[in-house]
Length: 202
Image (cartoon, rainbow, N blue to C red; front, top):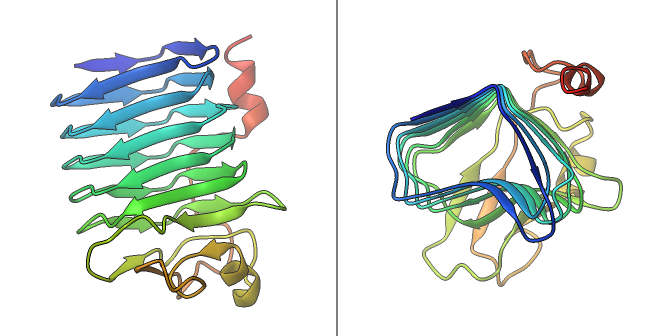
């Protein structure tokens, strides 16, 4: 199934697109705005999300859990309250060339995703928010989360670390974010500026 060149506007508790136990899905060049969440994927795969924009969701832009073979590439998410992207227990997730501007949280992690590739992204937290927030509710074996080679809006390692809540900060959390080496400047992404994106939908 392919969803392409669509606009989705949610209200209240609405989620714009939901897939559960689905296969071979491609979502391209779509705009998601408002509502509780933009895209929710549970127990799906393979799935590709490409060249989409997510704006102002009061819960999360994307929720990806229990999936296999998901590729999230060249998307832009901003101003989602609880999490720009929420990740839990995905196999072989590839997340690259995305721009995630957090509300309270840019990336929320509830359990490890074995084989995850998460690099060449811009992870930009709100001034009082978290770049990455890791849940204390995970009770499995200790896990290292590879977030190396991303751009964080700064090259100050102490500032980046202060924007990450994980097992290095809280003994009740059994996941640890590894973010060095970092990208030392904005990495190449295809995503257009937000003003240009909005102009497409006027």
